[in-house]
Structure formats: C-alpha cells, structure tokens
Length: 404
Image (tube, rainbow, N blue to C red; front, side):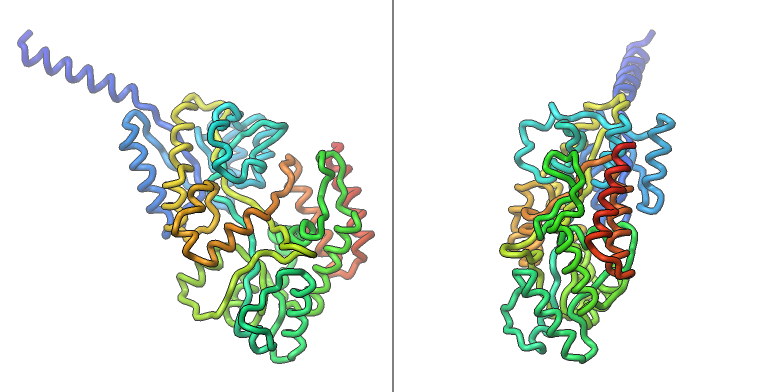
C-alpha cells in the first residue's frame, strides 16, 4: 500500500473515532420568544464550541402542552437528558422517580444560588435553580399625587395600602385603587398567598405534616384580600388589570418582571414605581417560583448533562440571559450584584423582594392543593362565602387529599 493511502486510512480512522466519541445530549426548554431565543441558541453554540465532544440537541416546548409532553416522554422512556421544569412541576417528577438526585454535585457552590428549597425533597436536591420569579407592588405615582399623597409616599404596610386604595377609589373619578384578579386558574393563588404569608399564615405546619390553612392569621389575610377587592378593585384577568394599570386607571397591582419588560418594549409613558409587598409591621412576603434545570434519572449522559447545566446557570450566562429577556431574578447571587441590576431601581426592587419571598410547599399533590386554594379564594371573594368556614373546609379537603 502506498504511503499516501496509508495516511488517508489513518486520518479516516481518526475522524471516525472522533465523531463516534462525541456525546449528544437532548435539552427540552420553554424559552421560545423571539427576544430571547437567539440568546439561547448562541449559548448552546458557544457551549458546543468550548466542548467539542458534546453536541446539544434543543427541543422547544410550550406552556400549553409542555407538561403533557414531558409526562408522556418520561412514561415512554423517551425523555431528554436535560429538562427545564417550572417549580410547580418539580415534586411530581421527583416523586415519580424521573429526576436524578444531584445533592452530591452542588454542595460546593450551593450558597451562591437562591431557590434551592423549591428543588429539595426529603432533604435531597434534584435540580439547579436557573431563573427565578417573584411579584412586587406596582404603583401609579400620578394617581397617588391626584389623591393628595406626596411624591415619595410608599405603602410599606398593608394598612397604608388599604387606606391609599380606598382614597383613590372614593374620589369617584373613574380610577381604581386596586387591580383584583378574576378566578383565573394558576394565577389567583399566587395573588392570595403573599397576603397569607405577610400575615404570618401558612399552608402547612413547620414540619410539613399538618394543614393549617384555617388559622386565625389565614382568615384575617383572606378577609383583607376580599376588602381590597370589594372596596377598591378593578376586576379582570392578569392581562386585563395590567392593561388598565398601563392605561392609568389603577393605582396599585401585584405583578411580575414581565410588566417591566412590557413597559419597556411598548415604550409606555407611565409615571410608575415598584416596591416590595407591604406587611403588617414590616415589609411582607411575596410569591416565589422559578425555572429549574434537571437531569433525567435514566440519562446515559449525566456527566455531559451536568456540565451543560453548570454552564447555563453560571453567573455570566444568567446576566446575559436576563439582559436579553429583561428578567429581574437570576438565581445566582453573584449575577444579582451585576451593575445591570444594581443600576436599575425597579430591578433592585425585585432582587429585594426575592429575599422576602416564599415558595409553595414541594408536594407531589401541589397541583390539586393549588386548585383547592383557588376555589376557596373564589368562593369567598366572588360568592361571598364566610372566610373562616370556607378555609376550614379547604383544610379538610387538603388533609384528605394527602392521605390518599
């Protein structure tokens, strides 16, 4: 055989060996918006360039059918190596044995990230926090000025919020003090829980064993929530109250960082401010959720999957992601200290609120518990049922559900 032929054969063998050594991991994710998808694609390409032995195959999911697709994929053994999961879904997939325990892999840097409680079940950690979310109070400064409040007035306590919303509505100028949500599924409970937690109420006891939803604190929280709805509320779904707020019709609403993004993209000329959830004697607690990155327990490429997740949640990439998406709550504490967040007073509000936010319990029955809580709020607020008896009935239902 000629020397040239031998060299060609050797090079061909090396090429085949290199290709065969490349690992392909699949990632199913939900960020499909035109504003952020190019950043997702760029991060994947840069990861592959830095790790030529790993190829990442990305599949986009939608919130409309993503949960169903994931359930079917895990059941059929076709789930991806890496999956993005909302915090509300984690417990379901953990308890069903689909998610890899990563406890031993996160101990060194766990203190550098927020959100671990949402990924922890029976003292084991199953996913890395990625992009978190909370709700803060948005206020219309022009409306408050018309109501006679000085420029720097903030409702730091719930009693002040009630007073200010009542005054705005009592002016009878077609303005409303408060934006109140309709019985919109998967949203109503997120509006009530900040009141529950700010009053010191809980869904379960500290050890998580007993439902305590009908406590005196919970009853008072629901009573105040209803008072705001009845006395000052502009009632619509979340999009509707945000539209009315941006149109200058509502003084206060609870919303997430997506409203900041909307104000920016739509170039809304509104004199607004943000502040943390008011409480009884101190600032209140708000709702915390988030997006997590988990590894399929049956993945054959767990090392590559871990490397890819570590890359995505790095402080640098979280800042990059948030800049592209105008998101306010990276899980990385180092990312939160970036000038992008510290130089923006509204983004700073979200970072501050994250420190005073709670997540719902990590419970495989949460989707059903959530439904019971929403029906309870709906019955009290819209059907005028008594808070104490209705919360007690909900407590009995949740207790029975957990015994099944």
